[in-house]
Image (tube, rainbow, N blue to C red; front, top):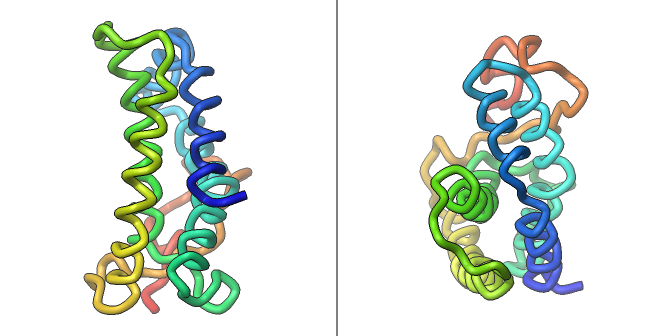
Length: 159
């Protein structure tokens, strides 16, 4: 399935599954220092962000993840799309802003805009990106509690 179609399908379900209790619990857990939001981020990296990075690289004719591990900047790029989808839920369920009942068109706009901009951005990152964004990410640790991660150095290496 093409990347845009795959992302649209995933985020259409993601946004539709958003609810006020879920959003409030997730935000409260983060504010209270619970590890669940961090573990969720690790799971998203492994199941969503890395596959999206691999698909972007393929579309941009760049080396695969098996040849060159994912970089911080690539994860940030994909997280930008994810954050926009999460913010739809925040606007709807936390801020109480008026939103259409069906957000499919908004999801389509976000995904389409992301894919169109992500391809040149990922190419630039590989060619001459900022050094802080070129830091290599290690594999996500979905089962490890956040408290066990002592520093950013465990999650990244300077390659």
